Structure formats: structure tokens, C-alpha cells
Image 1 (cartoon, rainbow, N blue to C red):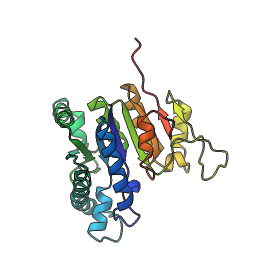
Image 2 (cartoon, one colour):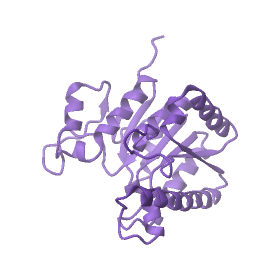
Image 3 (tube, rainbow, N blue to C red):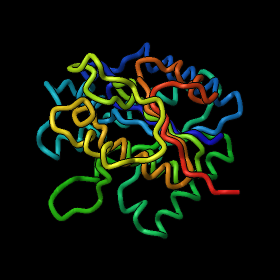
Image 4 (cartoon, rainbow, N blue to C red):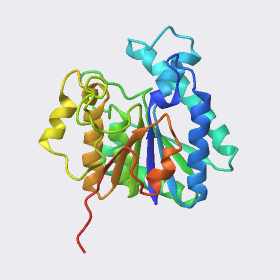
Length: 262
């Protein structure tokens, strides 16, 4: 399969911004093993700003845009150095692709991106994709920002014709309610349609669905499902779950992509 895996900052880094070495090493080991098994993988990786904060010894995440951009530029180097070193230990080559919204919204630029990433996959390379936070800002009047990597990963899955998109986050999946507040909250194992009820849950203020970024994950699910790609939300604290997900076992919440009728 072609599989796109998205990892969030909470999976990659400690709260200090420094790399969570044990978890990243385990993630790379599992991804390398899946690749050895014949899957073609794309990694959409957050963490550049967070790692830049740690590398620059800043007291916390910057509030001003220029410092965010500087942290992203420094952190992206650190992130790719880490991936290159760790994947290299398993004899896998990585490539970096940094995007802005213009690269996926304008047909010619999108085609250029699709040509590059699909050729990398043909060559056996593992592309590592992130938004170009050093130049893509959210200033008023600027339309270069995708904004978050849940949506970016779904767009990437669409561009490469992936069969599976996996979002590794700090949550186990989609719940019927906030599991931290409601003892009766239940994990939803499978979703075949994004209903108004699900959207309402995702947008509810103060809920785990809203505060955990579930609204962006549902948006990603809609993009993936529309192009026939399954999407799974799972907990990034346990990278070994990727084996079960790739083999179709029930893990986290699986959104079923729409298939063409035979």
C-alpha cells in the first residue's frame, strides 16, 4: 500500500521542546520495517517550531511571527538531521518537501509537487513533508498557509493516491464524549460518514474533540474518504500500533474511504 503517516509534535517531542528520543527511534524502526515489507510510505511531520524552540533555548513557544519563523527554520534542520540519521541506520533514504498552500492550490505547482513526490516513491525514497513555516504565515491578507498538518496530510494522501492515512496524535481516537470528563465515553471504532452530529461534537467548546484538534481531523477524514482513502486516528505514544493498522486490525478510529462501485 501507499501509506501516509502524520505525526504531531506531542508524539515527537517532550514538553520542553526537546526530542523524545525513545519514541522517535521506535517510530522510525516501525516505519522502516513497514517499508521493508513492501509498503510505500510518506511521513508528514510536525515539530519544527517546537524543536527550534528547544535548539534555540527559548523560554517557550514564541508569540511573534518572526521568532516563530526563525524557530521553524532552525527546527526543520534539526528534524531532518534526526530523520536522515535514524532512517539511514536501517538503509532508507529520506527526502524533504516543504509546502505552502500555493503549492497545492495552484494546478501547475500542485502538479510539480505530485511529480516530485511520486518519483521519490518510485525511487524507494521516504518523503518527509511539512508546511514551510519559515515563509508560510497566517498574517491578514496572506493566503499561503495550510495551517495544520492534519489537513496537509490528507492533501498529500490525495496527491499520491494513498490507500491509507494514519494520524498519530495524543488521543486514542474519536470518542462519543470527552473521556476525561465522562466515564461513559466510548471509543468509536469505525466511521463511514461524517454526520452533522460528529461535526457538532468536534466543534463543541471545552470537549476533548474540540480541544484535541478533532475538528481538523474530521476535515482531513472528509478529504481522504472522498478519494477512497481510509484514515485512522491512533495514539502516537505507541508507534507499534502501526503494524496492526497496516494489517487492517481494529485500532483507534478508522474512517472508511468511499470506494467506486464495481
